[in-house]
Image (cartoon, rainbow, N blue to C red; front, side, top):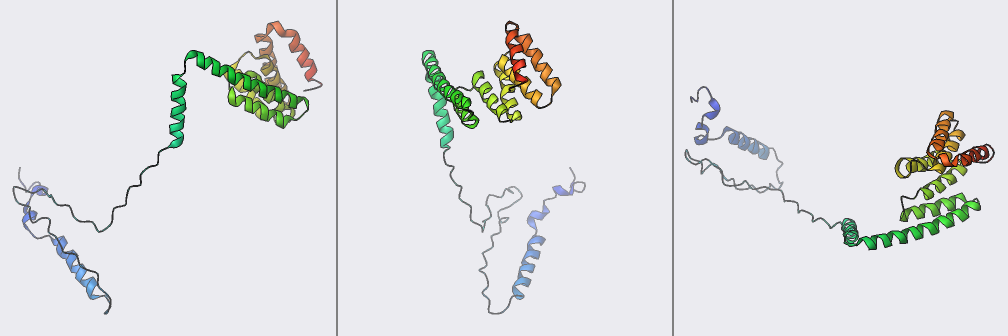
Length: 229
């Protein structure tokens, strides 16, 4: 292949002095001459010609140019203790037998029911904030209990925090129990208070459709809701 057509293949530059180096040296000399007298000039490092060992048959540069800057020390990462704890907890759960898992579940249910009873007592005293706190503590032990979510939603309804009530009710209907009678009725009452008549009618229809054995209670609730909800 001819080097006249592909000038980038011409290797004559390996045997000729570098014009770039000459220009850099010239600029460095100019900078020195412009410095004020009496100032201490920085120590000039000895130049190393890394192309001295380059020949026609050996043109690989094996010497690395020295760097004036200091390398930053890599900071060792601290172990993630929280991740390790989560992994240990997960491993302990795997090691449990089926019988031990059932026993642990029953214990969590027992604690959650105690918080539910405390919440019910506070609800009867109209201490809705305290009742919400107890129901939430119960959910920390059992997060798939429709009763705790529905009871907590009723407290939000009493406080007129309808959007927060709908969050709990929708969670029950979408994830836990799509036929939950109280959830449909409480949602109907909430939407009625929010002047959403279409949503109210839909919830009442679903309450009747999914709970045909309790139609009398549905009518009782709707009648009671007109006066007290």
